[in-house]
Figure 1 (spheres, one colour):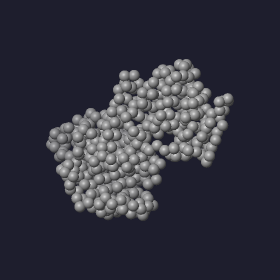
Figure 2: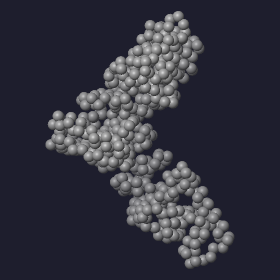
Figure 3: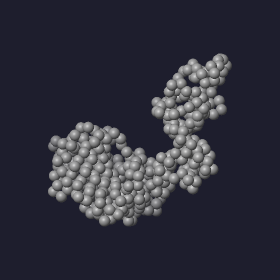
Figure 4: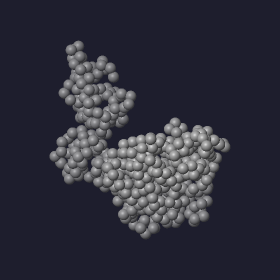
Length: 551
């Protein structure tokens, strides 16, 4: 909107008075002051303003003494000249500023203002937002409730009020750790499969730093203790096979090779190696060749090295044997540098990642076994606590691996908080040639779940490499009728599932179920928190000290 249009609006509002050049200059300064005030408030802040004029979809706001804002009014908002309105400030990456009306009608403003007045709280934009958020989420806005929420807002000033309101609705205690986890769950950064990948990578990174600062002996001992705990007490959930496909990442691309095809033979009489390759990506062979050669140059016994030749990557036993051999090296700067080089090798880093993540993934077959998910989570909690305690005792809390393990531990605590009232669990999945994370919600009432009768509904959310985001809603009735709805964004993926749904139908029929399936194009991508909140209390928990995965 140009300056002449604004002047025209003001003229129309105040009886077509002529604005002289001096007044025009002052108007420009007021507009600039208004814009500077908006910018200083920051993104997602709030501003209150009085509507000075309206022309079509354009409005002129007075947001303070000598501060004006011209803006475009979007949506069916019933705005009038002289009306006070509250706006949310949105600053985009393209340097554009938009104002979103907090209230859609004057009745909302009246209700919010009355609630604040009854509670003797200030009628500011921030307080209005707090009350409206509580109303939108179905929370009471009586004096006591408003005081409680106001205390929370003051205690956590850097947290979005709406997040605090939603956590309050779910009954989740307001702590710094819980707030951080809530944000992670809302931003799709909560996945346990990713957490174990991060832990394995940071373990190697941290161990390298410990070796640099404390020597090879200290660094290897701490590394070995942590890795041993990560792998302790859990059977590998992934079937071992000599023909498994392994994944190596060199930081630029993903390399895939069949383990039975890769061989590297270290010769006894020279420092070089004869490299034999049969139908394998040459970069994979080169990585394996370099790694085995590094082991030989480090002084590792060749009988040990030869045992590593059959697979592209090292398995759990190989890794533990290698660390044991490295501990035998003399304590010296040269040994430390050699070990640092081995730890930086991509085969070693990817071998650690696979060994760790495989321990904490479940195949679809294992999920169906009673108690499998429970026992997995209980072991994860025990292992993470053991590692955190040992690292605190060793004074190694300032390290990437400690931070990642602590974050996972907080994630588990937060999940338990959710399970105090709702039936929800993450399922770290191992599917064909990929790792995936599943979010499982069970919609039922506590009585019917305990008695195993009545209707039960569940939502399984999957993030797949090729299919993308997949939501599967399943409703089971007491008559063994199963109604299933598949929600996908990709039309081709939706058609693919529809074309192969007969396989699922046949398997369910063999178990005595009758299935009806629908296939729906998914337009949104709701977070875990959004799905739970939108259940409006229709999810009942069965929490009893551990995760319940009977669904």
